Image (cartoon, rainbow, N blue to C red; front, side, top):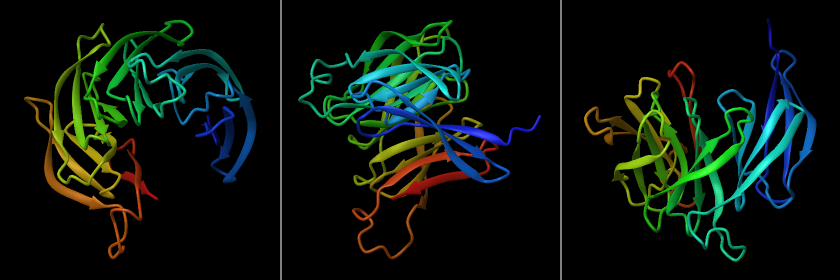
Length: 275
């Protein structure tokens, strides 16, 4: 069956919170707003992702981690919002700490891995999910990075045994290991500093083979290629890097900020952006 219409769910950086559903027709090449779903006003979702079965949306929502049941592209219902509990200062209205990113596992037990950002962001949070409703259930672990950490993106290896985190603020890449196939908790493997003190990694993408990791450097405005060491599972810089802005920019360190990167499903193409 042909599926010419694809639905995109979009959040917002600032209040009031809402989820916008757009319909993209890949034959007519039209993009239409088909629904604006109201959500808690002070919980705008700056990053959202689907559960493995697309029955739920998980949101990084200011001072909260939220989840929504998805019955259809235009029927989205708020389930629950959990506070950030990794640091007593993080959830205070007076601090700039905010939920910035989350990654939903595609393999059992389908946990969700969450990152805060800005200040008081030295831990990641692991949430279990309800097996029926897919809602965020329990904050089972707050695993440490370091006090000045600010993670903005993470990616699993294909087996979802190792988790790689881009630490923009501390300028390093972290590797954690799942404790077991039944336990979503993480333990630290190690971390590696970025090649240049001005790199500031914001995003990571993993090649489908699991052999290569691509780190997008926000301030460096480049993609750096890493080989995954088969023994340690730590990323090793190959000294190959690819620019994300044209040559001749007067000040490449301040005029542009690289954003995100993603591999095509075939693994043959890597898309990346800078702004």
